[in-house]
Structures are given as C-alpha cells and as structure tokens.
Length: 124
Image (tube, rainbow, N blue to C red; front, top):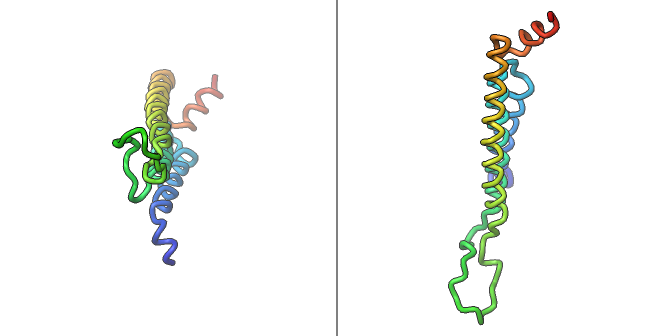
C-alpha cells in the first residue's frame, strides 16, 4: 500500500490518459473526441516532465570554473523538458487542425455527430 501512495502521480497520469482515451473512443461528437485527444496528450506531457524531475537537483547551468569536475548527478536532465516543449507545440498544432477539420465538417454536413454524418454520407 505504501508503494501505491508513494507513486500517486503515476495513478493521476493513468487516470487522465484513460479519460482521454475513453472520450476518443466512446463519444460520438467530434469536438468531444478532439477534447479527449487533447487530454490524452496533456497527460503524456505531464508524465514525461515529471520523469525528468530529480529531487535535490539544480538546473544544468555551470556556475564554477572549468577546471573542476562536473558532477552530473547534481543536475536535472533538460532533455525531457525540451522534448515536451516540442510536444506541446505539436499538440497545439494538432488541436488547431482537428478543430478546423471539425468546423469544415460542420459546415458541410450541419452536424458534428458521427452517426448523422455517416447516415448523410451513405445516403449520397
């Protein structure tokens, strides 16, 4: 039980990911699916940022002379954070494209419900 409490953040990420996955798979409204995708992406980004954190470590800026040995254990690895900044940009772009496609679908079919759109397509 102690292990479960110590790793509570993993349970939160998993819960957020499952909420996003459920919204993408179970909902029929396209905007709700897009919101689910955004929640899923956000959960993954938060997960990777938390993995990059290290207790008692500092930012990787060297403040001492070049003659001393650098102890990498004392510094946080900046790579996961930098990669997640890129992932944030990609997720915002994906969200924008998905919402613009949903807008175009609404203009074409007059609805955002999957079943109604499929009925109109099959009726053509």
